[in-house]
Image (cartoon, rainbow, N blue to C red):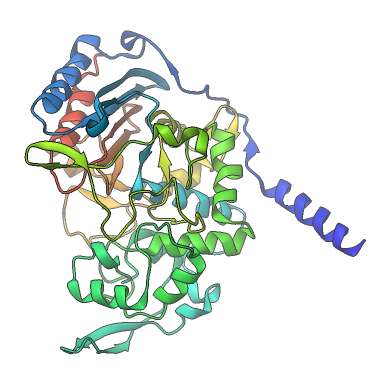
Length: 427
């Protein structure tokens, strides 16, 4: 009887804190003629020309591009191949590994918990994950791989983790080779894995390792959002995948976004490709397993890089932000919370440049707008390890998403796509 009471109390408590109905009721994303929302169909066709040429010139194997304005999808097309080796054509419902585009969703999840009054952003993370107590900064590294450290000037905060100012690194993709070795030797999991490990196990290993620098002093792209993912599990009492599904994906009807794809959808996953002798071939496994997110133990949920999704699903997520936290009558975040998430949180750590970093996004400033080609001040954007990019311009109510799946190659389609989407505004 006692256990039943506890269960009912837990369910009741969760329902009290679940996403709420909103007085505002913005419609779901739907397709419309470009002219109906002030976009030129003739100018949008320039995206066709650019991407058809990129595929024909073998600059990319394929891509999906989506443009939405004022809550209406005005451009949504697929180009090229999902897998050249088996002549599989790319379709608009294809699923992509979005890697670091996961970070914005993880930030949203943790800010939903923040809105419930569960913690302060400037709380030390060691208050909730004790392994992070008394952080150390890397001092010297010797030829045999051993190293010395010195005490950090202060504890790592939750805000530091979200803004990549904690001093934590990124292992295999770290810019500092010393940290690549340190993380590898410690068995820290980068990006994602098909091995049987949990995010808790990886984060606790990470907590014992030295930092690049004192918390708050510099910007170092990091596994901080993986730490936040584990923190979400602690604060919500739920596995990450369940929290994301019930609190974000189901309310927004993001029905194709997963950490691990169900068998029924696995055939829609786009192959990661690279170019060899002028031909596109499947990219071989390196430090990660390209069978992710279809096979393996399916026990590791990376808050920084683990999700796969579609262009339509991610556009839906971004539309919720342009609506200031609401979509289809469901409010995930307050307007006031979205406002400061999209404000610069790192001061002038990047120097006097064209953008700052908010909570989950790079955010363009007035200098960036004035330089051209990146949208209006306030435009927020990011991308993913496998060559995916997105942007959302609140002033113009414009969303752009371009998804590819490549490695060890480079292309110019990302910046060209954003420029062509913005120049199609015709009102």
